[in-house]
Length: 116
View 1 (spheres, rainbow, N blue to C red):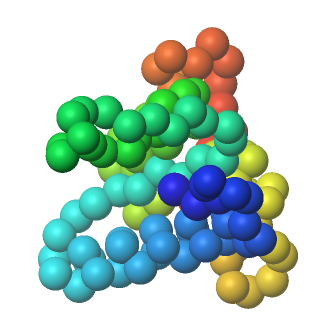
View 2: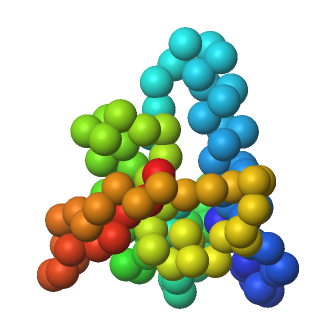
């Protein structure tokens, strides 16, 4: 996750570039993976004892990323990003999106726009 504990410039672009690097490395090893990238407020918290503590994120944005990741196989794409991510990406040749359509994501009452 990017932008925690303080918001950072270009955090959405950095997250997408990291997703590309992950996907490229796994693809080079002939491993299949799908990635979901979202943007929105979340709750960060630490779970576990002091010596085994892990920081994790909770909230609708996290749930949506998980749901989008699960849809990559059906669409035949490496990554699916949410509408807020597609809106925040700068125009130009560095990162481009392609609208896939509205998807039904479990746990969300309305269809969600999804982008490759």
